[in-house]
Image (cartoon, rainbow, N blue to C red; front, side, top):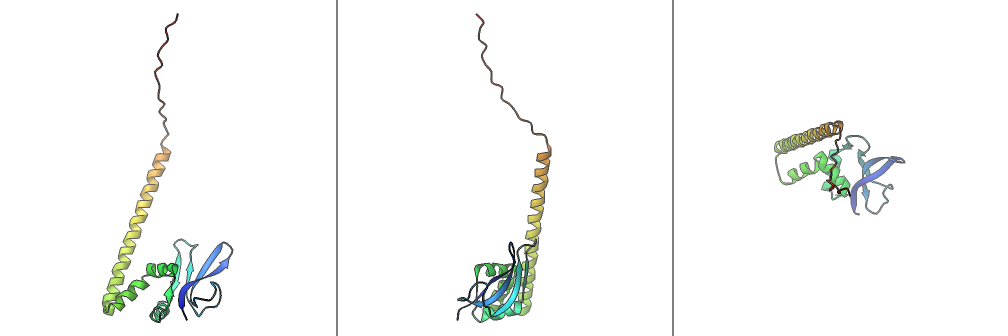
Length: 147
């Protein structure tokens, strides 16, 4: 049986909420599943991703394959990095320090992105508040002699 970690759509029309589930690859998208291991809400800003890390690790160790979207969500949470470090044989304390360093880098990157965005917004506001002066080119027309 091919088992996948994938999204199961919930919610209302135009308001999706997804459960992260473990399901047989042959079952329909919103059909039967083995276990619900998380939740993903793309409508909030920032997106909410709640995952039971222990169960994800359990299913990944037992051969479940995440879909591309779920893999992306797990990467953003740091779960796949943690799994990779454990597979390489690092000690538990070193894994924790690596995860903390990764989180700090991620926070710094997000902070830099926000400051860049705010700076761009202020520049755009300043340029829009200045009066737009259009330069019209005056072409010289040769004067015709009057006869």
